Length: 166
Image (tube, rainbow, N blue to C red):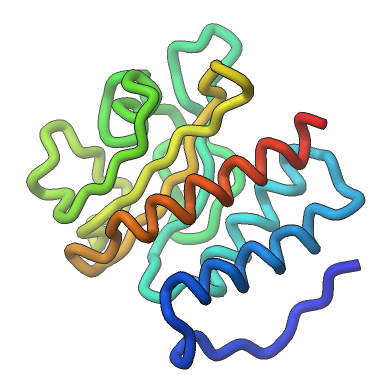
């Protein structure tokens, strides 16, 4: 069973922080294969452990594969549906690529669910070769995310999909 502990990220490097998050995430996933339960705990853990976030959560593709529908998240209320190809999340699904946006004001077609968001990282969730949704992180700070964040979040996203795909 997972047990939360007091946490101070100020003494860890970014890579050490992500390794700590991955260790706790594996504990949360142990013995649980429900996608929604794991998405809820995953978004809560990211929001709690990663500094300078104002939104962390999921969008999953609907049955038709044409729209993303909001899933478990932490932060202010969010857009409920996003068309594939629209905004950062929809573009990530359409291209199948992770997207790091240093300043959302410069991303054509950015959808502002929270006006305080200034940077964003979106990682597609893959089951085999199929994109099933995205993990979306927002920050009120420009340039909050970089390639180190992207690489680690991609790994955590793969761990998440593995938790319910087994």
